[in-house]
Length: 404
Figure 1 (cartoon, rainbow, N blue to C red):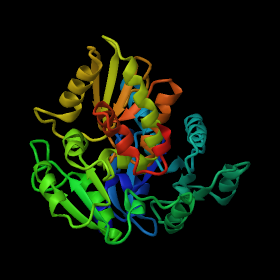
Figure 2: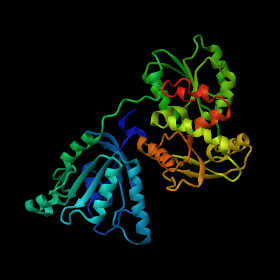
Figure 3: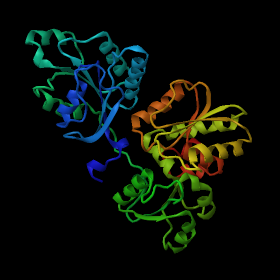
Figure 4: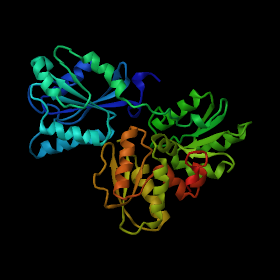
């Protein structure tokens, strides 16, 4: 997979924050060497977060996020500020841009403290540095403990240095695998990928693509089938498959065909493990036993795909939950970047695998739920539980199997 085709969730998210006219958009253009952001002397040109996937060397594939000014005004301005703050939930590296001639404002100081409270790597950029003297520079950094750079998007001062600094801000992380750590070379993995009305035309959905690539990267053998081909595929295998990975919607069908001795899990469960949220998702499923009529259940997806007539999130899951519990709960749906700040009205949250969300945002959502004492689980976990195969579906995952 080339850097240009790296999925958004796998890119380092760099959020650019600051007041209106601090030069956020100019800085993005200087960093990237492209006119990606609209630059204007008029305050408030950026009214919504603007996302741009690109390569930023030496860091690699990144998602640049240009945010609205944190000093916006009026009722609409407050909503824009809220959106800017929400971007922090997915930000891996924060750049706080300050107009060097004006210095740190009350809004800057407030945001700075908020970023630090979230333990987000940060660099403070004093932009328009060509407009101030050396003495003024010394005054700005007096008693300053944060990493900082004096930068001029106009003259290019320290733009190169800023590019070199960004990779140094990223904390070292342990290598993660979707499934490769469970495989040996030449193991056979069967991927069950239903091709129905919900499947994108001409391609596999992203979780299927990424798992397939991870299997191949570890020199294992991938056999990709549809639901109605699984029985034939199993018969044709001379060696027992190391693992079957299925779309969660097909769990019941696959479990009824595959011998119980063959390890079985789903794409959604693998992604919850990959994002670091699987333990919480397994724990959250217990709340399904206590659902009553009228309880609110939030079903949340990380993407904004076009919903089909038999959509899993808005149609299948509510039907399965109602049938399993024998109750009539109220279902609320969100997608994409929408995720309520106040989760207290909900008895349970059911979230997708999060293939379109980066790790920080996925863990943020689980943390919000935990802080508000609202159980949160995962599509695959819930479907496996309803079909009575949850223990089997997490048994292949040694780091999680002991939770039940």
